[in-house]
Amino acid sequence: MQTLTSRWSNVGKVMQLGLEGVAGATLFALMLLTTADVVGRYFFNAPILGTVELTQQMLAAVVFLSLPVACWREEHISVDLLDAVFPARFIWLRQLIVNLVVALALWVIAGRVWSLAERAFAWGDVTEFLRIPNGYLIYLISLMLFLSALLTLGRAIGYLLEGFGVVERGGPVSPTKPNTDKQQGDTHD
Image (cartoon, rainbow, N blue to C red):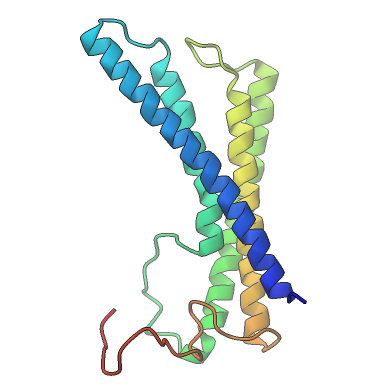
């Protein structure tokens, strides 16, 4: 029988695979569009019309489709200013606080972006040349921000449970699980 942790891990893998797949396909389409536009522009004097708008839309989609995966894996850019201040036994507390603050910030931003999407549809906001409604992309951005907030909150709950000993330690910042990958005496990363 699977444990709750392994079930959540499987859900995370499926979500990650889906979002990375869509983001990767969008990035590949962006690459094909750019290549076709450059070839058409310089060799046939016939650029693809609306390439700038499509590039903007696809680039925003790639970035925000990747955000939930970065939150799930905790692969944000980070500065380790507090590593020396926190004792190893309280790393879970630091991670809990950081993840709660980030989850709250993402939730607030997602709500504001959702309002912008509603306004974009109400005003009929479209791209200048191709007349693509901007609201769809803005809703996608908002949904990805909401998902990122929920995943970050899930990470915070995981750190809370780990800190109180409800779940087994062994996360990426857990000080109690030794790193078996390093050779004895190897002190550098």
